[in-house]
Length: 174
Image 1: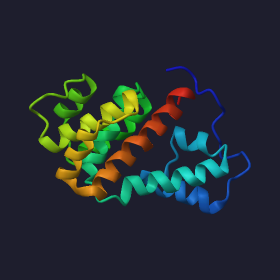
Image 2: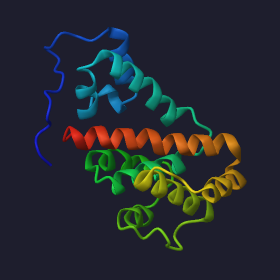
Image 3: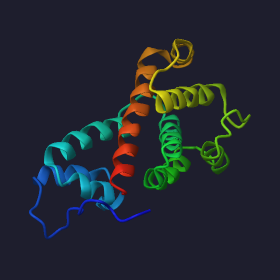
Image 4: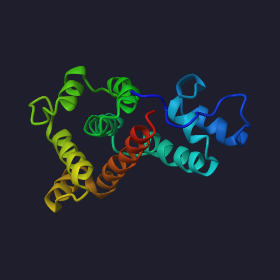
């Protein structure tokens, strides 16, 4: 990957609001800022909104973390967002995913018998939403039967949020 296209925020730059910096650090293991955090901190309003939204997607949804991480990996694979893959691959494994499934997600082997019905439905949603934006009504109806309306909304929001993440990462070569 090429060099990051904007200068990431550094500790000797003017500090962002302390509560924002604490919130961003609080979402990271050991409080260590990663590349995307340092770029986001170039815009306090963006970093504030991003931290709130992505923090909720990552920690407050009822849709299982394993399923959310599966969506995040699939988005990263489809959008060739290597940084995103690198962050979410270990998180997916920690949430109960497998190396074999993650390899299938990356290689587009999503019809594999490795995936259960719920996972295949989430992959169908992710693929349609990421590749063409429009999602077939039958895909949504299937998700509603499997997960109910609230978790279907959360699945769609996870796909949308992580498409935003991957597009930001890829555009700025993070």
